[in-house]
Amino acid sequence: MNAKFSLSLLLTASLAACTTLGPNYQAPANTAPAAYRAASPAGAELQRDWWLMFGDAQLDALEAQALRASPTLAAAAARLERARASLGATQSRDLPQVDLGANAGRLRTSAKGATTPVLGGQPVVFDSASYGLQASLGWELDLWGRLKRETEAAQAQLDASTLDAAAARVSLTADVASAYWQWRALADEAGVLERARLSRATALKVVQTRFDAGAASAQDLERARAELASAEADLSDMPRRQALALNLIAALTGQAATDLKLQAAPLAAPPAVRAGLPSELLQRRPDLAQSLALLHAATAQVGVAEAAFYPSIRLTGSFGTSSKELGDLLSAPARLYNFGPSLSLPLFDAGRNQANLAGAKAQVDESLAAFRGRLLQALREVDDALAELQGRAATEAAQQRALAAAHQALGVAQNRYAQGAVGYLDVTEAERSPLATERALAQLRGAQWAATAQLVKALGGGWSATAAPATAASGG
Image 1: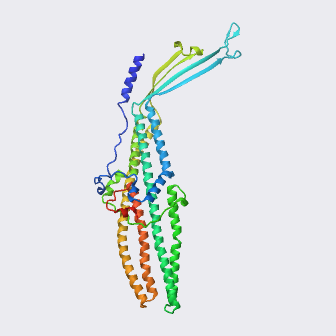
Image 2: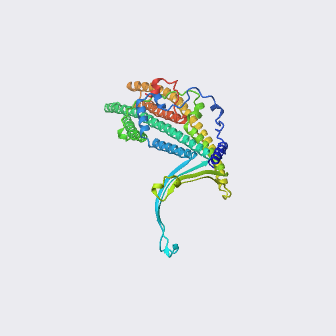
Image 3: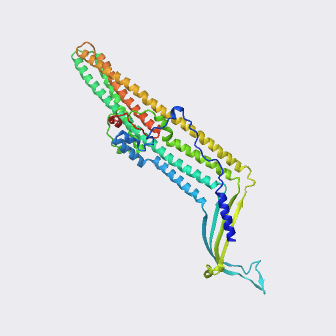
């Protein structure tokens, strides 16, 4: 009997290894535009610590603090551990499950019961103890690959959780850099406004002196006062804006704003971006890879749904001992066992299995559509960031030319005012232009660095800043 059982088990297990229902996962064909399908250049792997290429010690410290303290990353890590545990639980179903149990009890029947047997006019009462020790075995044979597909789906879900954590890391570090660069741009703008205020205050003293001497008009004096008041108003709003930027940095790095001790340094131009970046997109963005992992999981679930239409076989058995005396519990006569397969064949389920299969196939279609949508969004984000950088660079070049011309015009106006050829109104008009241009340049520089952070996020990491000098890459 044991030989027959072993042979049956071997044949059944062999059959189980031969069949796996459901479609095998295949990555979708590349749906990116032709311009994005060029071969990726060497060294296109994700730069995990991409911010290091800027050589900014303050930024490095902020990124390290954010990675340690971010609740977003902690939640992503917890989801990853949950997915890993789920995979372990799913894999355990491939192996036999063994349980061990023991029992002890005492039974006595009533002498006054209606069904108590009577022998010789006396009620027969049973009073005895019982002891048992038993091990049970259960093993579902994966005849149709259902358990294999469940494991495949769980592994794909684990991959998706891993990539979700990577995407959260890229997003967080890009947001930290963007907030930090915005704070530095505001510091530059505040410096321009402070110079403007000092210039207006000095001009007011000059005009006041000339007015007292009868060399300047009341209109000149009031205009000088108005220019100073306007500069002070613009400057007074800067602490609020800088505080908001600092609060954002603090929130992203998991600390109080009062604990931040940052030193402002002028922002240089962001590093040049080499050509060919979009061709790396599909290999670098973790959220795109995550979409493919979810598609893989959905595809595997189709096999699980198909297997529900077929019979399932489970091998069960038990072995143990049972005795009324504890001392005889381990003796040979007390042994008992039971082995045998059980078969379950679905005959009528009111369309449940068919509905589950249709739902699984619809989930594949949904996951595929989600991937394509995310791909198109990713391409747009890269294009937007590159367009921002290129457009801002052209604007900066024009602003630099305007600044040079404005300084020349200011020099001419100041000379003519000293000679008495023009009034102070002409000087203030000439002085307003270079200061306004410097302020616009500070704001423009902030926008350039914000676009740089957006490009980092859009690409899933950094790039080789081969065209940028070290000073430009450091932002200072």
